[in-house]
Every structure is written in C-alpha cells, then in structure tokens.
Image 1 (cartoon, helix red, strand yellow):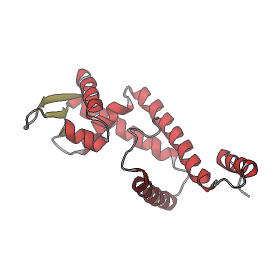
Image 2: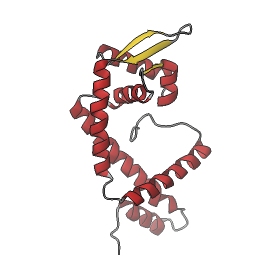
Image 3: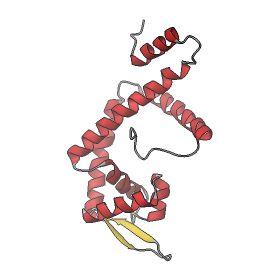
Amino acid sequence: MECQDAADEIALAWQRERPSAPTDSIDVVTRIWHLATLFGAQRRKLLSGLGVDMATLDLLSTLRRSGAPYCLSTREIAQRTMVTAGAVSQRVARAEREGLVTREPGSLPRSVTVSLTKDGHHLVESTVDQLLTDELELISGLSTAQRAQLAQLLKLLLADVHTRVGPTAPTHVGSV
C-alpha cells in the first residue's frame, strides 16, 4: 500500500467533514501546486547563487532562444514572455544597466529592439545549463517513459484549463 501524502490527508479530511464536497481535484491540483512551489523555490535558490533573478533569466533566455543575432522588439518579448509591456521595460532597463542587453530604436516608430550582449549571452548559456541539469535531477525519480507520459498529460491538462479560464499565464513557475 502506498503511503499517504498531504493531498491524501486533505481529501480525506474534506470527505469526512463534508461528504458531498467534490474532492477529486485535490489529488491533482494540490500536488501540482506543491510541485510548483518546490520547483519555484529550488529555481530561485539556484539562480540566486548564480547571481541572476528569474525575470532577468526569462528575458535573456527569450532573446537567446530567438536565434542569432539574438534580438527582438520589446513587443515580441512581451508576447513571448506573456508579461506586460511595462514589465518588459523594467526588465530591459535593469538588464541594460547590468550590461546584459542593449537597446536601440527599432525599424517602426516608437519601437525598440533589444539585443543580447556578449556578457548576457555568456550568462544565459552558463545559467541555462546549470538550471536544466538541476531540474532534471529533481525529476530523476521518474523514468524517461514516465516523464514523457507526465509531460503529455500535463500538456493536455494545461490546454484544457486554458480553454476554461483563458490564455493568461503566470510569469514564473511558482510565482504568486
């Protein structure tokens, strides 16, 4: 018999106290919530040790994933990171002060193009390798087949939830 975890205990308590309450979601949602909290805390801890925050890494990673020459308009960054234009502006300003990106006027009126600097490119390359290695270690208790199955189920669930609540998304895993 499997041992119980907090989600089981919560569901059992609600079933005992309110037998008619629909508790089926607790098994899934509470565990996802708990995992998001753990993953977010671990990511913040790792990034803090590397001297970068999640918002800056999100910006640098978005630019890096865009491919050479690693530049995007602020509008494209906002669309790809799912944060507001104001948040992008703040992130870019901070990263520019740190020498990680440059800003130049874009080809359209009032547009701005953001590019990775050599330092920004180096930081994102080294950070992403460490982050992905750390996160793989966190999920190493699952086999490759189990990870693939879980990824597919989470993808289905995420798509379905988006149809119910809309396309909004948190800016970072585990953020509140």
